[in-house]
Length: 174
Image 1 (cartoon, rainbow, N blue to C red):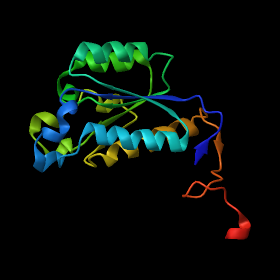
Image 2 (cartoon, rainbow, N blue to C red; image 1 turned 120 degrees about the vertical axis):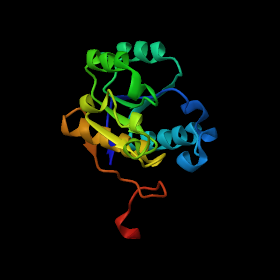
Image 3 (cartoon, one colour; image 1 turned 90 degrees about the vertical axis):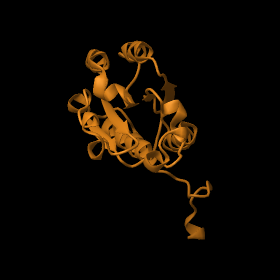
């Protein structure tokens, strides 16, 4: 599905240590990189016709400031808060004050890891939590955000008139 005349802005925020994801515990993170994830997200956003902005910081105050500035400027937030999920009341308060719907994303399944990772200050205020799907979880989150906004009436859908190879569908060829 693509969206016609879409003026929807989705913000993807990645928290601490995501900039070195490919160097983190290989048995947990499988060597994937944030750069790879963002590349796939850009392609997916372009295909479905939504604007997607990316941000990564290891500094809590930078993320909080960005969330504050999203008020009335962003339609949906996708956030992988990293360790801030388990420690940051400031991040929680920022999300509440922004009034922007959001999904919390984690590359690994935080509920199957250390006990301190099982509590997130964001989960109960998020529209949903997607964890344990590695890089694919980001794509699921983007698709779910678009679906959420569509249900809420923020998007006008149109049928995709192209085939997978990018050429218009032609009944004579099918």
